[in-house]
Length: 112
Image: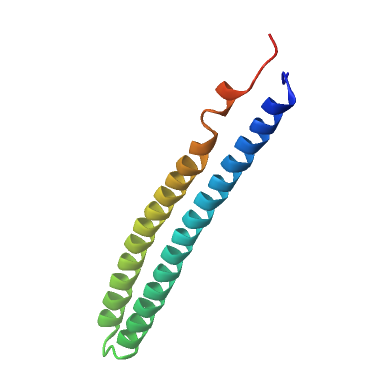
């Protein structure tokens, strides 16, 4: 239990500061993730458009299959790489968001 009003006020202030730090970290992290997703979406759309143009210009069925196979292979590899990158960004975000709260349990004033 809290010993006096001063300890309660300090605890409240510390909790508010930690919450504000956490919100700041979350905001920056989510913004970075959003930028990555937008960049990937734009790149993916451009690559798909280029592949469609190549496919429409294919003279033979073999060439069309080759273009389509190359596109799907590249798209899959790009997706896996991007998913890995986004996963790492989320993991880093979770670690950073937790930092302000790491030492809170040790700071709680308990009655003796």
